[in-house]
Length: 359
Ligand code: AHG
Ligand code: MN
Ligand code: MN
Image (cartoon, rainbow, N blue to C red; front, side, top):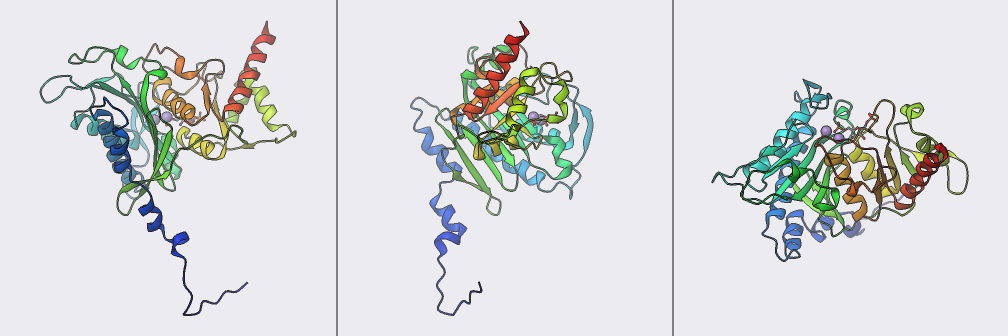
């Protein structure tokens, strides 16, 4: 149907004008200040950490968006402690997040997927007077950079367990996920978002790149109880445990609301983000190639599990709740099942059935 606009036509800007949306919505900065009042005994340190991550995210976002124009694509020529090739952007993002946290003197320690060991942070007074440690995967899905596909950053914050004033020790980092005080991710996608939780639900903020401000665009994000997407690298099928094979067959069976749709980006942040919005399950199981799984408990699984649970979803290693696992080493890997509650529960049922049928 053709539509002619006369000179008397009045547009309805409410639906179309994105400034409206931004005026209506809080900025991340305003949100942080508002929420700080909820933590009665907070000294503002946690808010400053989120603030510093917000700033680092903008810097990394700027670089990610220039990939192809500046010399940031490709391998850096080094491997990290886990024997994985580091991309130039892995190294860059790592530096930006670490420097931002160190310069602001707001944490006493940092552990990163890209560093062999944790970093002890000393204040300009030579003290160790901050109470939080940050763990992070500075660039997740970095093999996607060269092909222009979404990547992310994941972070996780804990209160230290050793006394304030002393240098941090490994036990400050090797805490179970249930001890997290905040966790979140940045997604550098068609738009750039920060999604995070401090244990009071999950909120998402979208960057307006023109003015460099994050706006609350996704308040109270939740996982649908049941979803229709399963995300797993099926190329490894023959190496999967029997329970995972059986669950995949279940997803593909033409019954009730199935078959489900298969979607796999190969960037945990992007896969989980999509599944949280649409409803789905992400699985990275053990396999002959990765006998302990591939994803890292402290940098990837715990923060994503905290977000998933806060959004009404579920995260497990196929048998046990991810956030209750007692970590034994910094770069520990675990199998990961994360997403819509009923889907993860169903996958666990298959894992259990397969385990019992072995005996
Ligand atoms: P990273 O880039 O931080 O090493 O993480 C990559 C991870 C994760 O983001 C993704 O889901 C998974 O590796 C993909 O692995 P496969 O290529 O083996 O499927
Ligand atoms: Mn990763
Ligand atoms: Mn990474």
